[in-house]
View 1 (cartoon, rainbow, N blue to C red):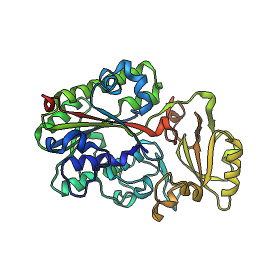
View 2: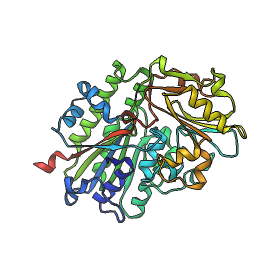
View 3: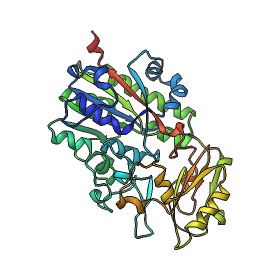
View 4: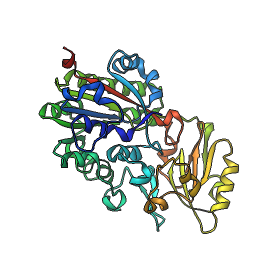
Length: 379
C-alpha cells in the first residue's frame, strides 16, 4: 500500500527531531537525520503521479526525477475526495477527512440550506469549530521547531488557511514576489520546516486541460521553481515535493447536468461536493428515491451510496459523529471520465472547466513524493 499525504509532515517533523513525529515514509534513513536541520516541503497543486510522464518534455528536473537520476521518487495517495481543500487540511493535520471535517470542495452547513465553498470561506463558520484539529505546523512550533509557511498574501485570514496551516509562522508573498527566492531565503534564515505552494499547474489543467500548451507552460514554470530550490538548498537542507491530487480531462459527452435532468433533480434539497463527487441532501423522506433515480440514470458512470453506505466503505477514514451531517444523504462518486455538473447551483465557469478531479480513480488519487538532498551533502 502506498503511503499517504497525511504522512508527509510527520515524516518531515521526524527528520527535524520533533517529539511525537513518526516517519512512515523512510525519509530519515534515506536523507540521514544527522545531516538535515531544515526541510522545505513544496506542494504542487495538481501534480498527479500519472501526469509525470506527460509533463516530462516540459520539465527537465521532474523528468530526471522520474528516470531515477535525481532524488528519490515515491508514490503516495491523497485523501478522498481528491480535492484541494480536503488534501491541504489532510496534509496539515495528518488526519483523514472524516476526522478533520473538510470533506469536499463545497459542503452543506448542517441545519441550513447554505453551501460553504472552502476556497472562499473566511470566518463563518468559525475556523476551529468547522475544523477542530491542530496542525503539524502548530505542533512543531509548540515543540520549538520553527515551522514557516510561504503563502500568497491573499490567503491570509481565510478559513482554509487556518484549517490547513493553523499555528504556522506565515510569510505572505505578493503576486510579483519571487516564490522560489522567498522559500530559499527562509531556508537560509534558520533550521526548521519551510512550506511553499504553487497552483499554476492545477489552474492550467482546469482552464485549458491536461496536455494543453498552457499546461505545459505551467509545468515548465513549476520545474524552474523546483530547480532553483534544489540549487539553493543549504548543505543541511532537504527538499520534499508532493501534490494534493492528480486529474484528467472530461470530454463534453461524459458530462451530465443534474439541473437539466428532472430525474436527477427530483427530491434534492441541497447540492454540494463537486462534479466528480456529489453530496445530495434530500427532501424529508426522499433519500431512497433519489438514490434509486441516480443509480438508474448514472448506471455505469458513478457509484451511488447512501450516507451510511459511503461511510462504511472507509473512503473518508473514520468519520467523527459531528461531521456526519456534512456528507450528503446520497453520495455520487463518478467513475471513468464522468462528471455531474450543477449549472443551476454553481457559478457558470464551473461547467466550462476542462480538467477535473475529486473522485477515487488512481489518476486522481495517486501523487508523488520527491525527496532531494542538498547537492552540497554529496560533495
